Amino acid sequence: MTNGKAPSGAPWRNFYGRRQGKGLRRSQVGYMQEDLGDLSVPNVGWDENPDRHKIDPKALFATPRPVWLEIGFGGGEHMVHQAARNPDIGLIGCEPYINGIAMLLGKIRTAGVRNVAIHPGDARDLFDVLPSASIDKAFLLYPDPWPKARHHRRRFVNPEFLDPLAEVMKPGALLRVATDIEDYVRQTLDQMHRHPAFEWLAERPADWREPWDDWVSTRYELKAIREDRTPHYLTFRRL
Image (cartoon, rainbow, N blue to C red; front, side, top):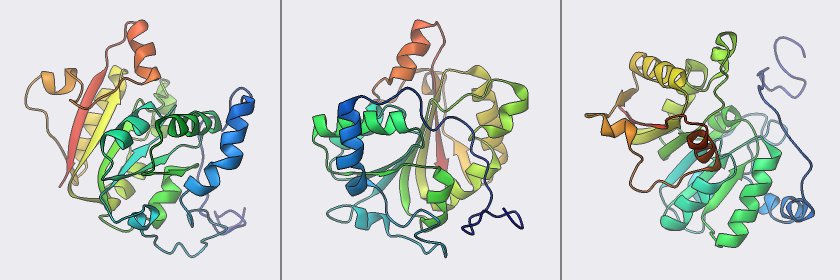
């Protein structure tokens, strides 16, 4: 690294978390080899797009359509559910965790959805190349809680992530955040209140206690409920 940049010219960005867990099953290896290339968003990596030219997210899909973004799709349950429920939108999912990508690819095969694209890496690299006001809805569902106080700066709900997210969201676009960690709720509300681009849409307690009408529980939420933690559902609007 020189002058704060990686050899490829990419800005030096700390990545927090694991890239891979336990070994993949044989079927999952097949999904990665056979499907990931066709579903990956092109020209996001610094090696293939060092000048950070903007991409056209609508061109990722068969016909132009509104584009939604899921940041950290985990095992892919919600992403596939929304893609199947909304065939007229295009859904991009970001996830650096290899095991989660493999799980999503298996679910895509089973569901037969065709309106999805994947960035298998850091969402910040995708933000670099998305045009301003190109995302119609965004999801941040059960993000890594980073529970230790010294790690709170690693959480997604800080300006390093929220500023570029606001840039790529259309005015009026909704951001949904779900978490079972009360301190994450507090930090989210604090940061979003401070951020000039977002407003919280809650008007009554049910607006953050009850899931959205089109919600499907993820494996992370089911685990939280088993362990007696309370899910929270927060909706913000891009001003």
